[in-house]
Image (cartoon, rainbow, N blue to C red; front, side, top):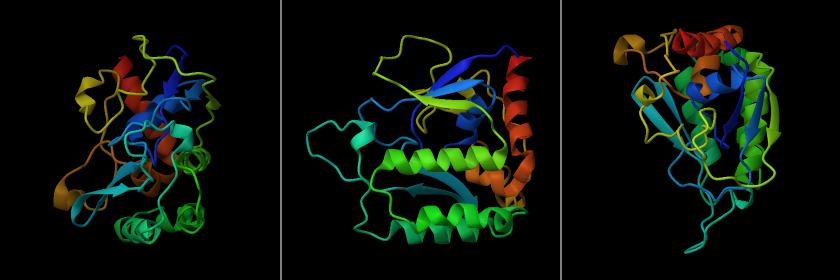
Length: 215
């Protein structure tokens, strides 16, 4: 597959679609100058447990009537969301083959209180890349440029509001999920799901998604 660079939004434990784009590119740019976009993967992810699909949301401090630069969005700790997220993750993935192997890398995100959402997401991204063996060079946008139709700009197309079937280059294949017999395979969950279930094989799964779309 021809090498290309991608542009991505910040994201909280982004879905495998996001990481498939990242893994298949030699370099990626993370958007840091946009206005914060609500109800997106920027502050939420989806996992799967015994009760099916579950959404985890990082609460943020809002400025009423004012647009917030994504770099300035602060995390709201008025509720114990870290405890709830970690409990949900542990319950969902303890039966998975690699959860205990990676737990010490994941748990610190639910113990230390990052001030800014962007910083939390960036540290999660780099940890996920290290664990999965993704070697893509990651940089950051210097200014904000509106979407211009470039096919490798995924800042606003990888979102819970757009079905993955709209992405003709992304073809998710099934991998092991502990609760698939209860709920069938659930595609495009958080990278947490892939890491905990496939471990070191995660990068091969990600590359197969993009390669399948290129055929």
